View (cartoon, one colour):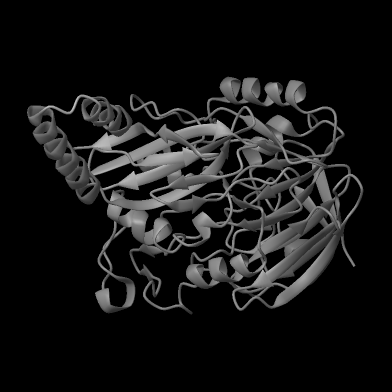
Length: 429
């Protein structure tokens, strides 16, 4: 890798020994340095929360060089996270979450405040192109991800949680004027489906990224591990189950758990081992369980009379059914392209924010359902005493200071405001 910091030090050392030959060398080195900066173009920059209470500053460049960062007025070299044939490099710099002032190429990078009070939530954001499903990616109304992100910016969140599924352009668009020409699991599709729409908001607040089933092995996993995975990059084999980790938000903890795998068995023992880690990590305060696939949901018009075997994550329900510690107050997910709250009996409540931009599921449910039973083949029954649906594309805002969970549409119109109890359970009005 081209080490710009060491390069600049060499220039400084030579400048102290100003012989005619050194003058010429210094001039040549300065020209090379400037050419390197010109050639290395930074395409995207952002920051994201990672384990050990740290912040990862990342950048994508169009060659094999990384930009220079400044952290609290100190110049720091970003390291190569991954590189693709000198055409794209992902750079990374790990800093403490208390770092206050960070810049990359003179662009200010979002940092975390000491006390996080407002969190935006969005999920399932890419533009769906799969066979006959041809979403209008070039239309702000047909694919309103950019509108959602612009609306989120107006709320000035201090942290943004993405509950997974970023890449949706799986097959070729049949009409490029409507949905563009990018598709497949490649950098250009990642740019189109996430990084371009998120370019501005990525400089306004750090993210927590959760892996979705569209980032599972055999799908968009390469981009997930290269760009967004919170752990150090390991290019060898795809991990069907990523490590679990926790983040202390202040009055509540987040526990991030990977449910991206489509396999029913889902390497059961490894999954149980990962879940057991949950008990040792989370015990001292209210906790939200963040995972892509919800344990509970309803997407049918008449959930009271439908056996809900497919409505939720049966594998997780069977494995985790009675294991959640009492301080787990809610499960936050996406996966189903709806927005919904389910208040469960004797189980953590379910919050779904899967309406971030991908083609929505049928919006034909009632706004409110009461006393819905979930019947599963494991011999146990589960009940939701209250279910609320919120329609259209949108996002959610969690106010930790005023204990509120609000749902908005892509025009930034508030659809509903739920309260949050002292232990951060949703309280419906």
